[in-house]
Structures are given as structure tokens and as C-alpha cells.
Length: 140
Image (tube, rainbow, N blue to C red; front, side, top):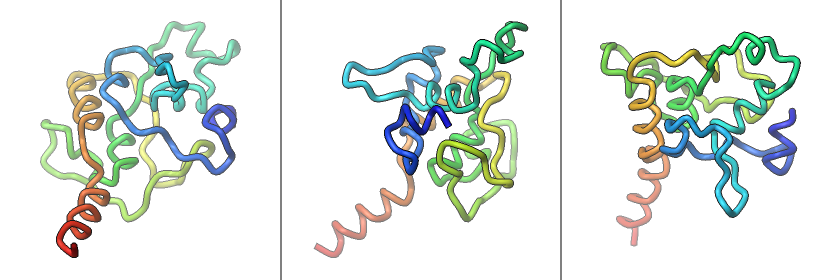
């Protein structure tokens, strides 16, 4: 719930994934005050809370690339070079707050390829936006 307040309104959606989310700078905020996706998720999940057991154990959790892919409307596993199958979802993840049942976890303990996968998402284009732009250009 705290992420909703930080992001502005209770109907806010997640910030756009950016390459900065892969740099290990989860507290990064641009000078204009916009919050990174990593920071918003960590805040929403309570990772910054003083009573969070993960903090006292020193466990490192970061954005789950599979979840970030779903926020962009691309198939889960799209950026994972180690798998052959991807999973297509027909819906977008829930806004800040409780997750939908089908969503992959928002946070994971990073594995190999983690930073590369997050960077790919941060540099990616949301396919639905590209399709709309193309339709608008061709209808012109």
C-alpha cells in the first residue's frame, strides 16, 4: 500500500522498467522525483520496513525478470536464453498492492543473466504501444 501513496494515487500503475533497475540502484530516483520500478516494488513488498526478516538476514532480493516481462505485455520468459518455451498471459499484472493469482513473484534472489534480462526489459518496447503507433502511422 505504501507504493500507492508514493506513486501518487491509489489507482497508480507501476513505473516503466528502465535499465537503471539492473544496476543495483534500487533507491534511485531521478531529479524530477519519479521512482524506479525496482524501488516501487521493494517499497510495495515491504522490503524497506525495519521489521522485514529479509533485511536482518542480509538476503538480497531484486526484481523478477519474468514479472517485469508481464508488466510490458511480453511473454513470461521472453528474455531468458536458457528456456525454450515462453508463457503468454492475457492480462497485465495488478497495480501496486496485492498480486493477481497468476502473476510470477515480483521479487526473487537474482540468478545468472538477471541483470541482462532486466536491461533487455528496460530497453524494450511495449508491443501494444508499438502496434498502436504503427496503426496510427499507416492510417495517416
